[in-house]
Length: 275
Image (cartoon, rainbow, N blue to C red; front, side, top):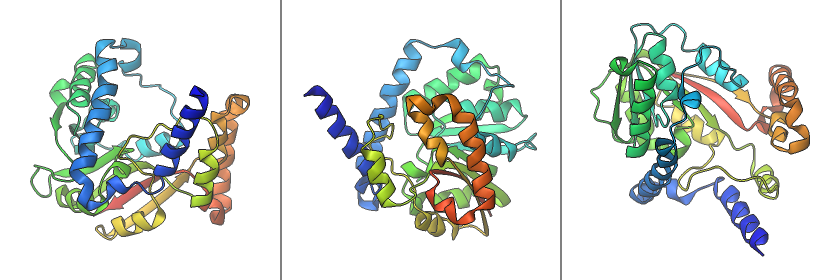
């Protein structure tokens, strides 16, 4: 009975990620409170048992293809100002600070901000970073402040109308906003995913993005570039296919380049918006 209950809850969580009603404009306060509580609880476990091996910066860390591409766009950042939206654990903030940038990290979770500060202190970049409890939907920064605005899984937690206006506002002319985000291929595929008993990791207020949402968001910028990731690699979450995860990833990259019409089946993308 416990298995059936957990399975049913997981199915509902996956289906909610298709069109989460909490992301609607009138539910912002309710959503943000749930998100804050969710991530404060997650941060607490890391703060209580701070794993140095997990948080110590590794220049040679192996990243999945989407992350490699994301960071390849942030190589020439020495002396640049970067805003890390929904900074979470602070990994991207630390990496960019190590690259010579001045980084501001924001998150609505006080626990995550504390964790980011601890991460920056451990990796000796506290003097190159500043972290503030702040919503990306209502920022306190002045106009045209940042050369880059970045986020790993940030936009799909936000109201895109409000966040888009704010991100465009604080970004300098000629600056870029770079995000890695989960994508909805199409509703039928979400339904099939819901039947697979692997845990849904989405937060209460999160919802994977649709291409129409990105098209709407991109209207606030002068140019948009999209790269697609995770098609067959999605299967590597199954135990029998986990060992060939790297090969599945290589096939995904090949298919994305050669068969553009199959991109509609991909589960993630890196988004680059230029102001």
